[in-house]
Amino acid sequence: MPEIELSSGSIDYQDTGGWGPVLVFGHGVPMNEKQWRKVVPLLEGYRCILPTLPLGGHRRPMKPDADLTHPGVARLLGEFLERLGLDDVTLVLNDWGGGQLLVAEEQGRRVGRLVLVACEAFDNFPPGPGKALAMVCRVPGGVRLLTQLMRIPAVRAHPKGYGGMSLRGVPDEIMAEWFAPATRSKAIRRDFAKFATSAPKRETLLAWTERLRKFDRPVLVVWATEDPLMPREHGPRLAELYPEGRLVEISDSSTLVPEDQPEQLAAALTDFLVQTGAEPVRPAG
Image (cartoon, rainbow, N blue to C red; front, side, top):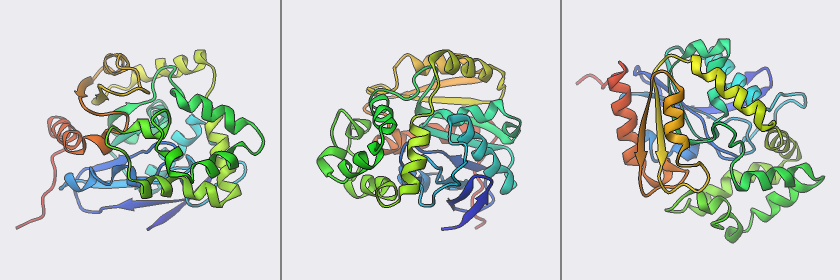
């Protein structure tokens, strides 16, 4: 897997290559690129790039002074786009919503389209069980305790926690991989705690949201109708927030739409891309 050195440290990424329009995928906490493993193969004709961001499932620790707040990670994502020389990018997010903040930064000029799939929004940072997780991470030794508990399959799959993020259920080996880096590395646990405890007060979150109204490029909001973490009303609100926003709702899915309904998600994403001028590039012959 290729990696790239950024100002906050080295991150790895997957790149399907090709000459098609570029799609860059963000992931949740503490997940990695495998969150999109069912969707990417359905996007033939597009170049899909999947960085593993420092949200706790990353394989290499960041520098001790790295800014791992939501805006800090968004800027790191922007730096990633710059270093790879990517323009007119379609940025696709699921679960973690902080990547939206990139479009309010100067680096956001490289984002041509935004796709928000059942993600944090408005003052819902972090959602539901994430608030309890943040409290645990503030306690000395809390992250270590959490990661040890997450080694137990029944804890990982509990419906009041990560198990509730998918109606189909995330395969146990995938979820184990997401928690493995923080289980093994004290430095990654440090990064995990920095990010997990970084959400500011409600007033600041809503002020950040207001800045997003200035993003005047196409936005697709894909919302899950059975999601206990991302409020149902946030889908329409997000679509109305962005001047060029549009909404698609997907039933029979929880937060991890790429897990529960990958075909429907890929179809909605492809329709949006074609309608906004990002036609797939098929191999010759």
